[in-house]
Image (tube, rainbow over all chains, first blue to last red; front, side, top):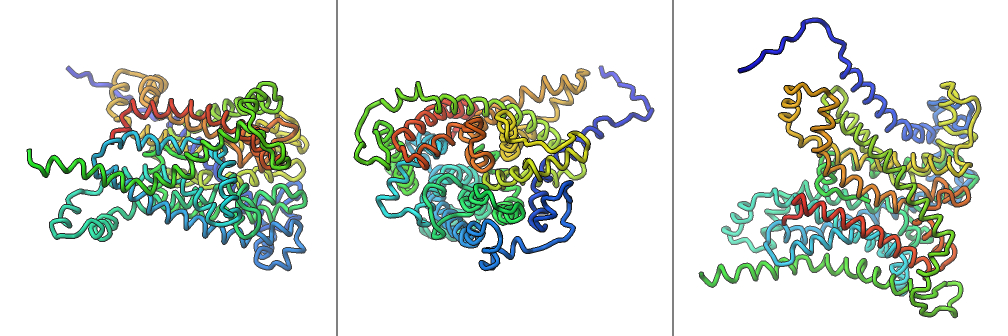
Length: 297
Length: 301
C-alpha cells in the first residue's frame, strides 16, 4: 500500500536555499578577506595602508614593496632592511630545500608504498603502524638531539640538515598516500610486462610508474608544501642566508618593531604564493590524499 | 604443494623488507634515535652556557616540573587553548562541510577558498593576523569602526584574555580546512537513501541531522577531534609570530615555553624534559587515534 502525499501547489519561500547562500557567502568572506587584506596592503604605500579609516583597495597602487626585495640598495632605505635584503636568499633556499625534499621523499616512499600495495609480507601491519606513529611524534621532541647531531656532523646552517628532517616529516604521509594510490593501478599491467620478459626495474620504470604518475605528483606536492611551510626546525638549524628559509625570515619581520606593514605584507604574499598555487593546481588530488590519509600537523 | 608456491611468500617477505629498508633507515636514524637520545638529555643538567656543570641527574628535571610555575602555567594555557580552538573548529568545520555538501552555484569556488588557509604557512598566518589585529592601524579596528560596532580603536592583544582569544581565532582560521576536508569526505559517503527514508518517516531537518548525519559522521568527527587536539597542543608558528607568548605568559603554550627554554636559555636538559611531557601526552592521544583506525578497518593491508 502506498499513500500519496499531497503537495500543495502554492509558492513556498525557499528558506533552505536562502540560508545556504547566506552561509556560503559568509564563509567565503571569512576565508578570503584576511588574505585579501595582506595582498591589497602589499600593493599600497605605507601611508595608505595605515590610514584611519583604512582604504580597502590600493588607491595609489605601487610595486615598491616588492621591488625593495630585488634592489638591496633601496632595501637599506626601507625600514626593516635586514629582513628585506635576506628575503630573496631565503626564497631561493626554500625552493631548493622543498624541491630536494620532494624528490628524496618520493624515491623512499615509492619503494615502501610499492611493498604495501603489491606484496604480502610478515610484519606489514606493524610496520605501517610504526610509520604512522613516527608521524605522531612532535617535532619539538626530536629537535634538541637533532640539533646536537647536526652540530657534531658540522651540518648546521646547511640545506642537507633541513632536507633530511623534512623528509622524515613527510615520509609517513607520502607512503600512506602512495600505498592507496598504487593499489588502484591494475596488476595486469605488470603481469603483461613480465610476460614480455621485462625485469622488475624495467617493469617499474616503464610500466608501473608512468601509470601511477598522478599519485606520485600528489605525493611530491605534499612533501614540497610540508618543507616549504615548516618553521621550528628551520629556526633551530639555520642562522645565515646560507640556509635560512622564508618562514624564518618572515618571522624576523614580525619581531622587528620598525618593519613597515606593507613590506611585511609583501614578504608574506611571496611566502604563500608557491604553496597556494600548488594547492589550487592539485586541489582534487590533495583533497583525496588528505581525506584518505587523514594526515597533517 | 609445489616448491614454487611454498617459496614465494618467503621471497615476498625479503623483497618487501628490502623495499622498506631505505625508509626505515632514514626514519630510525632521524626520529627513533633522537627521541631516545632526547630522553637521555632530559636526565642531564645540560645548559650550553654552563658546560662545566653538565652531569647526569636522573629524574630531577622531571621532579622540578611539579613546582615549576612557568611549566604549570604553560600547561594550563595549552589545555585552554586546545579546548577553545577545538570547540570553534568543530562547530565551524561541521557547518562549512554541511554547506559544501549541498549543491549550489559557486560551490567549486568556495571549496577552493577553503583550501586557502591550509596552504598558508603558519608564520605567514601569524604575520597576517598581526597586521589585522593591530591596535593603531589594524583592519579589524577599521572594519568594526566603519560598521559602527566600536567607537574607537581597541588594543586587542594587550590584555591577557584578549590576546589568548585572538590567537585562538588566528589558529582556527589556519587549521579549519583540514577538518572541513575530513568531514566533507565523511558526509559524501552517507547514502541518500537514509535521508529519503527519514523524510518518508516525516523527520524534520533537525531530526534528520541528529539521527542520520551525526551518527554517520561519528568516526570522522573523532578523527578531527584527535588530530586537531594534537595540532592545537603543539601550536607554535602562529603564536610565535603573533604574540611571542605575551602579554606576560598569557599565550605561552608548552611548545613555546620549550623553544624559549632551549633557544633563549640554552637549557637543553630542562627543554628535553618539557619535550618528553609533550611527547607522552601526544602519544596517549595517538593511541586513541590508531585504535580508531584499527576498529574501522582502515588498517587492513
